[in-house]
Length: 323
Image (cartoon, rainbow, N blue to C red; front, side, top):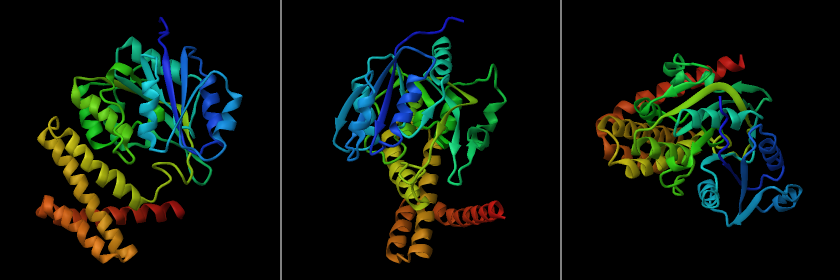
């Protein structure tokens, strides 16, 4: 096999990660794939990030006022020279073969993007083989060949309408497949929105491997993992879904739009339940329910037992893990 040698631009957005950023950068320098441009986008850090970066010479550093991870990635994209783009969160670590494995698959089979499995740190000091525990991938895992699972355009639509199994650090993407960059209105899932735009805009293909090729570290300031569940509901499944519905309404099929709308209403009902039972903010809970009723009265009533049963199952599972 001829190993591709195209330039890969690695964008590392960072905000007050001076303690973890060096490990992320070193993991890029340790890649077996040699042709790499490393761009650090400092999204308004107030710690000693600049001082920490003085130990690295072969990087490009750009500072900007704080505007969120999407705006940081877009600035990195503006300065990118490579035909292949990879973004590494500044608290994550790639294993040495990550880029080589991904670029070989991307280039030899002309995919739009590829992604890999990872080791996810847990708060108790353990680690999870993450994608092997992802139920949404089970229908596709049986197609594995040479440690990769290929996905066609229809499969990608079905999967990414439901979920996003590929956080930013897991993806290597063809630059020409990025349509408009990361949507800076999105609160949490800007990477999910980016992949959806590619998938919904054209016939596309991708591949993933269950081999664990990187490590996701978790702390209290992670954009997703560091948030409370109520914040995930409010930002990822309500505010962000509203933006996606508006953004993709002309390219979504009726059944796909319905999936988004149902997720949106169920999240409104669940957040209303949280505000009513946990926060005792009754007026806000009623406002949330009114937003759901405005979209679909019948389904809002159907969503209520769904939400309560989901919460019950989570509680049972948590108690089982503690036992």
